[in-house]
Each structure stands twice: as C-alpha cells, then as structure tokens.
Length: 148
Length: 148
DNA sequence: CTGCATGCAAACCTTTTGCAAGACT
DNA sequence: AGTCTTGCAAAAGGTTTGCATGCAG
Image 1: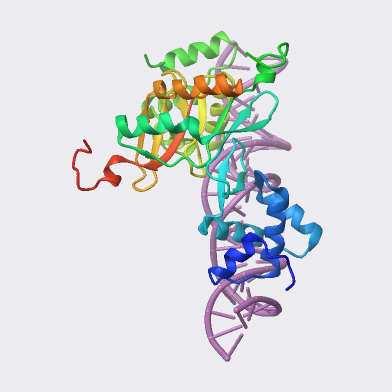
Image 2: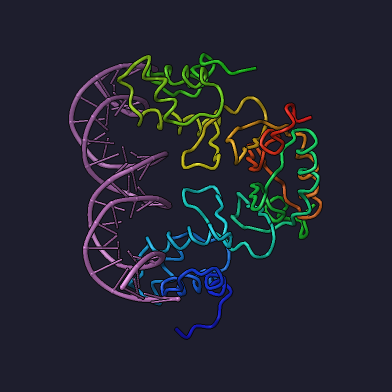
C-alpha cells in the first residue's frame, strides 16, 4: 500500500473501486508500455513483477478500464485486440503495410469527414481510434528523403 | 457489375487451380449472399445445397479467394471476420452502436482525408473497407421520422 | 496416375467464465 | 464482516491444421 499515486489508481479510488495489488501492477505495466499493447504483452510485463498474477485478471482489469473509459480497444488488423490509454484526446493511426510502422495523425483531419457524414447520412461518427492502413512516406519514396 | 461464380471458376482454371464441386458451391453461396458475410453464414448456405461440405473447406476456400485477391476480409467490430467480394469498388461502413445497423457510405467522402494524409504525412492511404462507429440518424433523432 | 483438395476431428489462439478461496474497505 | 477480486482451470468462439482418403486434371 505504498505506491505512487498513479492517475489510474486515483481514478479507481475516486470511483470507490477496490485498489488491489494486481490492479496496481497492471496499471504500472500499462503506463510503462504506453502505446498499443495486447493483453498478452501486459501479462508478460506484469509477470516480471509478480509471476502469480493471472492472464484472466489482466483481461478483467482491462475490461474494468474500458468500462471506466480510461482505455480503448483497437483492432490493428491481427487476431488480437490492442489497448491504449484514452487520455490524450482522440488520435488515430497510420499503419504502414510495408514496414509496419505506426504513426499518429491529428483528429483535425477527420473534421471534414465527420461533417459530411452528418450532412449526407445523418450519422454521428464516434471516431476515437481509427487505424488507416497504407504506405508510409519512406516506403513509398525510398529515394527521396522527405517523400513527395 | 457483379462477378459471377462462373468467372470465379474461370479465374481458378486460368490460374491452374482445381475446380471442385465444393468450391463451385461455395462460390455460388458467396454470390447469393452478396454482401458482408461470415464464414459461418457461407457454411450455412452451402449446407442447404450439400450438407457434406465442411466448415474447414469454407475457410480454406475463403483463404484461396483472398490469395487471389477476389475477396477481402473486414473487421466490423465483432469477433468474427466478415468477407466481401472485392469487385464493387471501395466502399465503407457506418455501424450504429445503438441499433447495430450497417449503412454504406461513399468513398468520395474520404478524398479530403486522403489528400491531407499525403500532404501532411506523406502517407498513401489504402482504404478499401473502413468501418466507422457512431450513431445513426434514426437513433440520434427518434422524433424526426425521416431524419431530414 | 499424381498431387492437390476434402472431411473429420483435434489443435489453436484469444478471451471469457464458474467457483472456491482470499483480500480490500 | 461483507462484498468484491483473484487464481485456476475449464469453456467458449472462431479459425487453423494433421492426416488419410478422394477426386480433378
């Protein structure tokens, strides 16, 4: 019961949810890995700290964090689900199908699309985590140093 | 401009692949169901014609069609993979998180996004099958009958 | 006839769940 | 103390695979 007051732990306490050592360790792992990670990756990381924590608990904690809207699941094309913290506003990804790099892009680029979806389809898009696949600048133009 | 089962069969022959009754039946089923369908749905359909065709064969045929670039897999948010024939040009989906309806939207709406991704990120987006989640007109405005 | 395709069932992979024991507040 | 959480293992859901048989070319 010493842990540095992580933001995730604080959130739990504020909402009257139990703070167990398992959860604290899982939170640490998520914060440390910080990105788009799978349950399995979190599990591996967590095992370094306490090998008795089970995969099931990782999944249950992840579910909890989703319910609390602190984490979002994303599908990056594979069979596994990726999770990421939801704390720095909506952002999206450009996944290069050639080199596998993942780059973020601004939510602002989606304004036009959102507007048109409302206008043309009366559809309120809720895009928190979009992944777009394609070819990144480096792979598209290996010769030119800055692409285009 | 739908691709007919016949042309799928032709494609197979041209590429020196075997045309088996199973494959022909599966092609028919895909054509008949015509849309975004799961392996299980194809399997059910195929069973009506010949109950001895196995799910494994459906999966193997689907894999073959993917390798031949005649069919694309899509993730529509659930646990299953959806497949669709690749012949009616790029199109995308609006999935209502409230009522579950799936509506298509035009690829034209993505032009702006594509352009900006190239300009700002030198990224060549390859968006063949995007799914956007949100709230459809009916669910957003239950009072307004025609959403207009 | 040769080799690829099929059926069946078992294996796999990721995620979920039932239950008894244990921990947080 | 009471309820929520955990670990374990088994189940579940979707997809893949090993192997012997069968069929297309």
